[in-house]
Image (cartoon, rainbow, N blue to C red; front, side, top):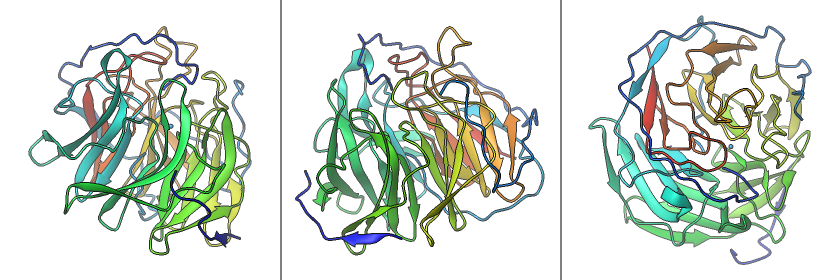
Length: 367
């Protein structure tokens, strides 16, 4: 079970080898709406053991209802590109019906503190107060009408920081709360919110991590939880109902990715294995739409010259099955996804493995 830890300290891709940066400014042409296509499914139940990949990343965290009403249908659409140009390794979060994009690497690998906000109603972007410093691989989440960054990476050394930054839209200003305990700093974690607690699963600090930490927003307190089944960074995590679904990721190296689905119960601080995601990958994007977990893109694709995955897959927790939908029009990694209503937004990212940021913004719209 979680044990409360009194605060011990003050607050303090994606290639972790940081190769030379080769920026790409390519974009996407108009994308027509297409129906979702059921290509494959995995019928094993949520309690089954997942097969790991042979080649052994915040996301919007929405508590949805578990529904199983047949395969989801919808299609991809082009939306307004990022206002500030290409960016990757960003934090992406839905807050009050809008999509926030935080930090990352811009064109030619320039580090960014920029924060852009997308209004789905007007299909326009605006800037808000920048982050206190340039950062990337932010562990970002929204709780109680505020935006939190609970750890992140800095510089080309990918050094981990444990500071917790808080953005209040009412004042358009950043502040800090108690940082992560010493020695637990990280970025590139799987991030989910449950019961006003921000959960960080694994992540990167010089290598992949398997520990789990939770920040209680109301108590300003950090807790430690049951470890992941294995070390992972550049993974995704989403809350559906009373469970948190943690999927994919890698063990530091880009080609060390997994298709593992691990299901966490916050009430009992325990894990069970779910059916494997059809495509093993890391650095992908995920969000919850209509009670289902949608996962798009990622990197480490040995079968593509770009090294990027185009796959778009959805897990239905009620049925315990995965389905493969129409692929991404512009395959990408190194960003996040956010859901607003029945729309899955993917802003920015990179179209080639490691560095190659683009400003492309596409959305999958549920019929």
